[in-house]
Structures are given as C-alpha cells and as structure tokens.
Image (cartoon, rainbow, N blue to C red; front, side):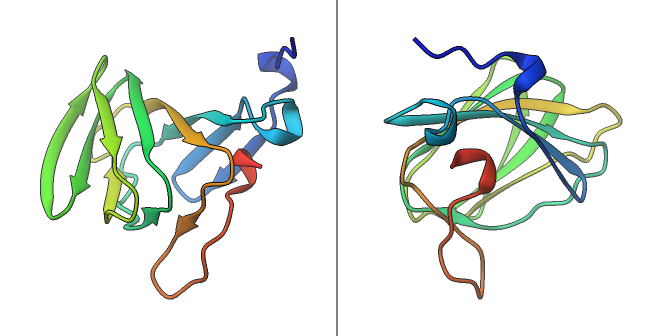
Length: 124
C-alpha cells in the first residue's frame, strides 16, 4: 500500500492558493486523486468546471463557494459536492487561510474559460 508522507508531498504555488499533492497516479493511486488546498486570505474566485464530480471538505477557516450562480458560505466541517460540467468557484474573503481537502476521480479534468480541458498537476 503506497504511503504519501506529508514531507514528500509536492507543493504547487499559484496566486492566492497553495496546493499540496496527496493521492494521484504519479504517487500510486489508480482511481482517486486527493490533495489539499490552502486559499490565502483575500483569494478571489476563479470560475471553472470539472469533467467529473469533485468533492471539497473544509478542514479549517471559512470561504465562499459559488455553484450554478448561487453563493454558499463554507466553514470547517462542511462538504461541497460539485457535479460534473457545473460552473463553480471557491474564494476566501476572510482574514485566515481556508484549508480544504479536494477529491477527484483519476482522469478528470478542469475546464477554465477559454482554455482546453487539462489535468491539474496536483491530480496527475
């Protein structure tokens, strides 16, 4: 059984977001990818879609999800389930980091406006 230690997890820095890779095909997973996101205070919404269902579990902090035009407040312990091909975004308008665990089937892709679908590096 592969173990991905926290110390060996790859880190991906984006504007306002840090992604830390967990389960992915490159780290031994065949069916499910999992990673951790930290949305820094003031992180803006980045509208996009995914080709498969994605699940987010809020670990610490608070944030805002926009899903199909509706706004939802999120806090520690909440779970957001995003259906495939559904416009959504996460943002953090608060003063503390929003930390979430994200789960996505292997092979799923992100779809950003004006771009071809792609597999995020933390999920590959």
